[in-house]
Amino acid sequence: MSTNTRTLAAVVLAALLATAGFAQDFAGPELRGTATLRSGETMTGLIRQAQLGLVEGAEIGARLPDGGYIGVRTDAGVREIPATEIASIDVEWAQTGTEEEPRWKITKLTVTTTSGETIIGRPTWLVHATSLVIEADDGTQQRAVAFPLARSDFSPEKLMTRLELTTEPAAPAEEEPAAPAEEEPAAPAEEEP
Image: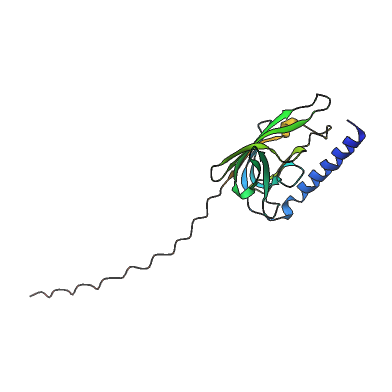
């Protein structure tokens, strides 16, 4: 790896880690779900950040004011699917480099929308990576970062392969107390002869 590539990789990795640190500072839509890594590990909770690249259109999460979107290049053109309309994202990765210089890239994206539509294509961005920040119900944050150009800390097992968003059921409406039943007047007592 050349010195320029290493410098770029270090800068990009630092940017990924820095954005992960700001994840709790923003209040976008509440996206809850489960992310699955290549290792099979899963992380469930509030999706603060689910990033597959380094540009707009490659990230969704609560840290973005509008939740972000995923850009998919299809045979019919580019589709931008807002986070709030995504039910799941499936990611297929391939190692296109060598053992000495791994080049992991996304070869296929499948986005299923909340309306049931399936959009299949390729990412609209060039640099592929994974940066996840998911907050569990107890407030702890789970993180997974996999940036293929940062060879020293990179593990392909930390690449995200699936993100399934769940729709939280609406809290049940509080029932109003029933109005007291009106009492019927008591029948007059019959007199005894």
